[in-house]
Image 1 (cartoon, rainbow, N blue to C red):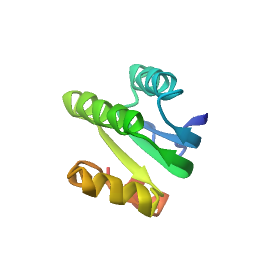
Image 2: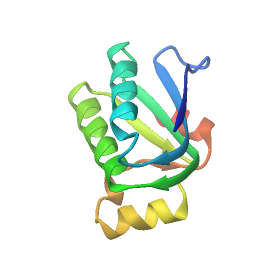
Image 3: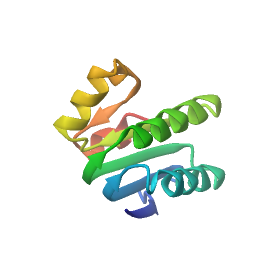
Image 4: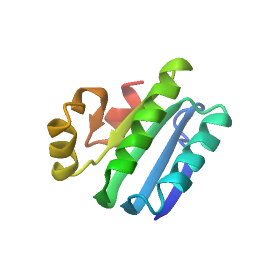
Length: 113
């Protein structure tokens, strides 16, 4: 799993995180640590780009739910960009799709903050 983090140049307090690969039990803890590290740098508005995620396992979903809760406590928000149809179906089957703010366009996700 590769991640790329950058401060969004259009906004001082938004971080865009691009994930690449599988989000499963093997790398879930490392991704969680990286996301928490970004939040600890005072970025409480995150856009997670999932365009290059080829597998979303239950451990990845657990991490996202934890990050959603953490950001809610901090009055922050998280938006998910380019989630696959399969990912959406999994979240829908788990009856948690409504907890995820999903976007196909990065500009729209940014404006939604």
